[in-house]
Length: 146
Image (cartoon, rainbow, N blue to C red; front, side, top):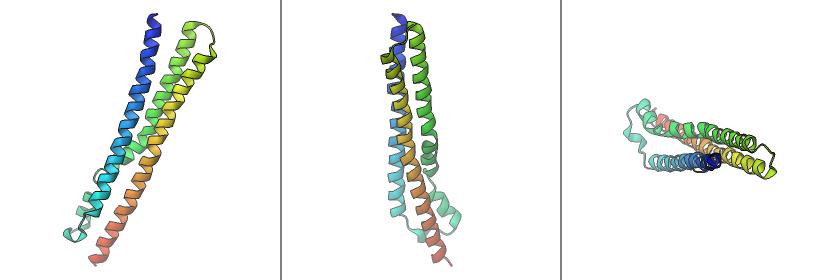
């Protein structure tokens, strides 16, 4: 009975812990993307005396979006590994192969993987869009200051 409670707690930790972290990462990535777009729209290029200062202001929070995009699959993979470990542990604990338990555990593991990709793909797209916008703004600054 005690092992059953532990397994339920582990399933909840993956559902609410890993998935919750991924949802938080997704929200932060989207928020920073919108913040950067608004900052770029209100930016006055003529105020900058040198290119380095402009690049510093343009690059705020962009690396955070890239970090989220590159690490979200690993957080999802962590959920996958934990889900598979829990599945194997529960199978070994019972001592019999129950297809329902196997499928439930694997579905939980795959859900974590999918969520990691759902967070990573848009974050990388956001990052690439921002990089391109940064390049355009710096090029406009260079044209105006020739």
